[in-house]
Amino acid sequence: MSALIPLEKWNITKFGGRYTPNTLRAWARNGYIAPPAQKVGRDWLVQSDATFQKPQKTIRIPQVVDFNVEPVDPVVMAILGK
Image (tube, rainbow, N blue to C red; front, side, top):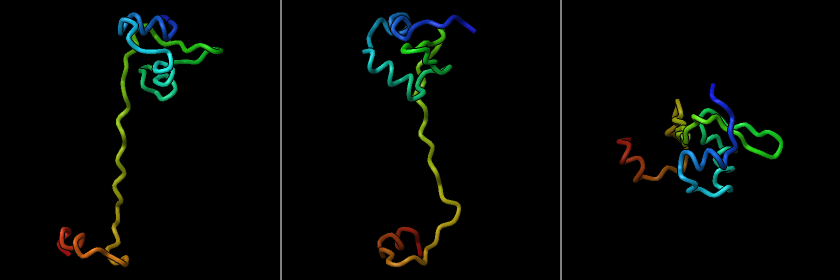
């Protein structure tokens, strides 16, 4: 485990200070930094070796599809081969 540093210092180290404090705080809140940032008081701290990692969206596919629901668009049924 590496030392915890302020988000702004991490920004300078990793990205040359490219991102605004608002962007960095949004990344920290939304879990875009791995390992996750920690809020200590009013400050966000990250490990010095942390990386930006935008989470992948999960796609939920229903297990059972009911084709007997009305009204059903005939174009959709033709595409599905029903």
